[in-house]
Amino acid sequence: MSLPIITRKRLPGMSMSSPLPRLASLALAWAVLGAPTAVVAQRPVELAPNAPQDRPVTTIDRCQYDALHRAIAPLVAQARSTYPDAKRRFKAGLPSGQTFFVTVELLDSLGRREQVFVAVDSIVGDTIAGRIWSPVQVVRGYRYRQPYSFPESDVRDWLISRPDGSEEGNVVGKFLDTYQPPATCADSTG
Image 1 (tube, rainbow, N blue to C red):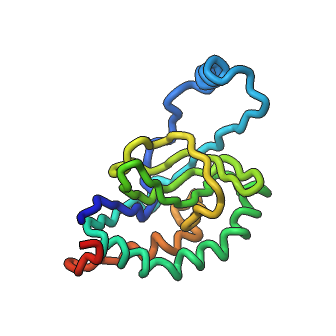
Image 2: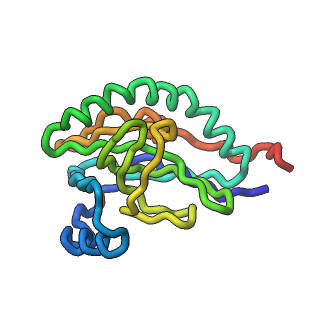
Image 3: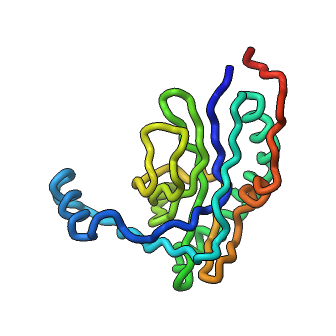
């Protein structure tokens, strides 16, 4: 069985302009949802022009996907172990020009998976709220800049982007820069 699966590796250097003016967004939210009881402000997403570009890793067969996940499992564990400190720093307020991202895997109704960056706007309790900050290419029902909330347990990696183009974290993404899925393998699903 072949599954179209794509895994996102690095951040795209994309435009930072908002698709709707802030007042129009608030008016739309008010009209659709009624008067808000709490409003989470969107943080500016700032990426340096020389920030590393996103280069996807595509796996077609289930066995390639499984091999990829076995290869990154120790790095996901490492990223999750260092996430609490990155979260603490984000909540305390990052310096001007820095943006906090996490990576999560999206799943659609057809079982397709795609790992994407989420620009973090807030963390309340164990829930992260932000915007999908990767062009969505495989899964359906999601789009670039779509608001997205999820439990912290879904975090696979994290990254702090700095104004000089450097980044902190992104251990999974840095590994994927050199990873090549097996060209062929026996698919255990038949």
